Amino acid sequence: MRHPKFIIVGIGVALAAAGGTTAAVVTSSAASTTPPAVTAPAAVPGTAAAVRVTHVPVGGKTEAILTDGKGLPLYFYGPDTATRSLVSGGLAMLWPPLTSAAPAAAGLSGKLTVVKDIHGGQVAYNGHPLYTFIGDRPGQVTGQGVQGFLVATPGIAPIAASASSAGTVPAAQSGSGYGGY
Image (cartoon, rainbow, N blue to C red):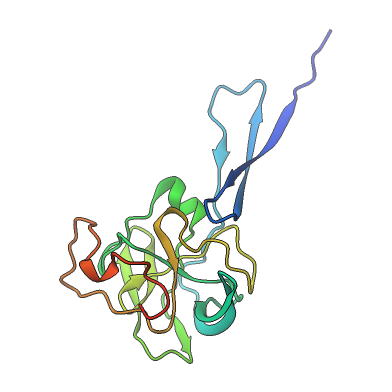
């Protein structure tokens, strides 16, 4: 008697410390000997990314934050430097980098640049490489303070070009990093 091949599809859900959830689709076959693959949303290199200021609730209070062209909140990772992203592998799957060859700014007073790093051309604001969070939706911030990521605000202080490339957080970043940061 032939046994049909079963495809098992599971959704892995990790509860974030701030109450947000993340999910990744994992597929595997009963006959497969290779580990299941998890894929992150693909960035389209060479496309223009729009960064703008949007007012949304963060921790119960409406705040001005940076969002991408789809309205998704943008975050920065405290250990990053002005020249290097330290987000890779599984962390980059949960926190996809914002990439673009020619980012556009709307209503920003800070400096929008492109950092050539492990992600290609990653968009940075005041030297902070920017990321989205797969658990967010437009107008919804669920990643604030999760895994060392903080929501990016228009007033975020610039990272000095001489910031440690070893990935340590400069003293000015040791606080919450939000609001007047």
